[in-house]
Length: 225
Image 1 (cartoon, rainbow, N blue to C red):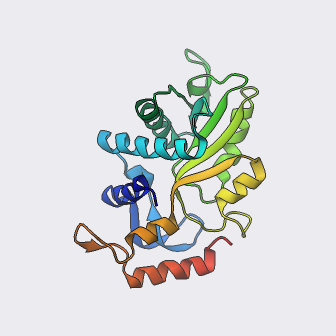
Image 2 (cartoon, rainbow, N blue to C red):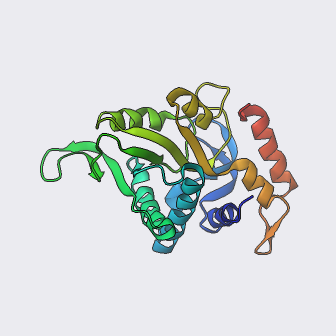
């Protein structure tokens, strides 16, 4: 596992973004883990988060894109932080763009914030986590309505590795199959377990055998094939 992935897993734990316990998800599933990207609230956290995204995006998509698009609302700070980090780490100016929930009819008019999109633009969508793929169903038409743009891929922070709306593949695999572009994550839940299971971190075992058993049982029921 790449070093930045290990650091990102620990960063999620330190930021209290990745939690373990008993959680009821929007889907109604009972899960032994939960990720809430709304826990990144400080400047230093956003700076680090942007760098982790930039490294993962560079690993998967190289420099073959022009715009980072962050769907409203959580994607807005992600697109800003990652575009800043990308310029810092790789020396390439990537434009950022997001959408408004409601179109603005005065001043900076339109549905978009940040950069306008133009024909030929190659876009990477950046989100926190995708469980069902519903957000892409909303985002993709917005992007295609702006012109002849190409969506190069999607990057999320954590692949939960559970079945999406189709009930067989993971949400990311469903997106790849439906839309024909790459869908990747900084880390997968498998990598999280691999790194934290029975491994002391700051004097504490985050995932012990009991919790590992609960996670395994969850994937027996909801894991993507």
